[in-house]
Length: 280
Image (tube, helix red, strand yellow):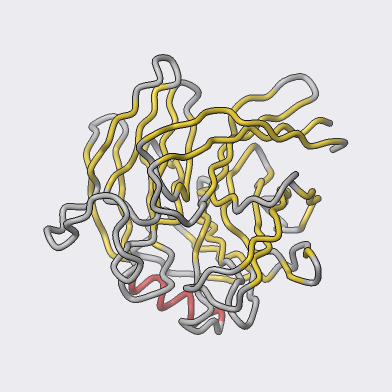
């Protein structure tokens, strides 16, 4: 890669705390970590549609659920014509798996508590350092990305055999050192699979907690080989953004375009979608 370029792609009203994004070229699907809705945004007519994915009557606030109660949906990924929405697992209330069937437009809900407990046991990561913020499905395995923003700074990738996240037999864990800013190591915030490579984003946030926010120093985009899980490259993204979602958008002759969403940690229902171009 020779250069990175960041520009505003869309301003969308009605969405706050965007933490995951998926593009199918004509539509954008966006989740927030504190909302009961999956957002469907039509790029042709700029119409935003709300899809309710949680129906708990105790969550009276449909948008901006209080931090202590929020499901903390940090993962939005595509597999087999379904969108998978995963809670981070950083607290006991954040273990939900939502599956949205794009053809039938149906929502199903499952619990990842047992899977997350197995993952912690295999990796030796305790509850204070467990924080899932990205996932990809390779066709045979799930790869889940732990954000190492806890005190132990355990950035790593869980390899889960099979296609059912609630019934996992074999789990492996591979650590990975990521680039830093001012001696603050960045940590995984999302990932997406393109061909044989995983493109990830990571943020350097000056905190030792998976729960409390810190000063944002900036973000990176990088690439990992999907088979070896070795780091191919990483580049600093311009500015000081807390990017939490990435999706592949378009490819040109010498350029790859990704869309990024940003969690600004405010209650304002207004989000900016950015386009990041990597030029070869």
